[in-house]
Length: 227
Image (tube, rainbow, N blue to C red; front, side, top):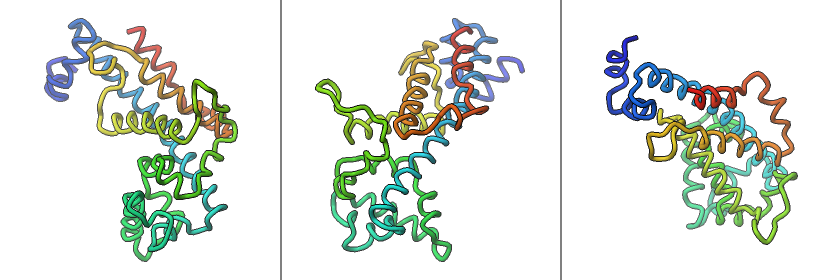
């Protein structure tokens, strides 16, 4: 495709950042755009695996602690999330239950709640109201030190970082630049990727085996760096 046609299709505003990063070289700009798409695909695959693993670990923990229907029961009147501090959590659960209607099951409810919901299980109010035990899903988590407290707030903030890049990809935003700059750089993507691998390991999940054949992130980052 000619660059002018490519630019008109994707929009000059969108392509300008890639063109600037490539010093005005149109062919390189188109290649960088395509490599960003490939990196987004690769990362979203890993994020999807991580999201499912995280929500399943949270669900299994609370099923054992609070019962098989812990989400619905604790969003109901008198439940652990039935308070002003956790109102958004209760609303999200009840909204999804209403959407499911007669097709309701606990497993469908778990699957219907998004990444944002699950990360909020580590927010202070949700964590405390549900019993302050959720860090047990990370049995290989390091012990806290004077410099770093590996507590629920630490985990919540790491999940915020992953949710951010997930949303960037979902909204077709680039992930191959320095933040707020038109400078080609894969540090942001590599750091979020490394964070997911770390959290897999904290959950005692063999991430290499889980992602076998799916994970080409370092290779695509290398292609971007070499462009």
